[in-house]
Image (cartoon, rainbow, N blue to C red; front, side):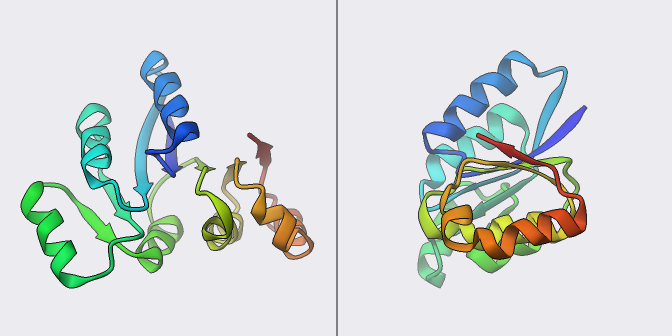
Length: 148
């Protein structure tokens, strides 16, 4: 079974990926799912796909975090970009699909490449803004880059 980290799970590419995973459930599982702030959709994804690690990168205020935890107290949810990067560095996955929009996805691309994991890249800004840094890292670590 291929273990997937799905970054930007609530966006259009994330939704399309979820459809594929649903159709190919015997081949794929989602280990990490992230969204910016749509916790209701992210929690539904967690329920539908049994996702063990959830990250909301755009919810950083303590009061908002507490409200999210009250909404779904049994979910394993982390907050902020640093927690997403920690998950990418430490959790078990085979391939990461980076569908985070804009420059917000740049650091995630580097974290994935630093581990030498397969990087399915839908975040073009990673290459436009920092391709001159990212591509040598990909070559050095043997990361497989898959354009999405």
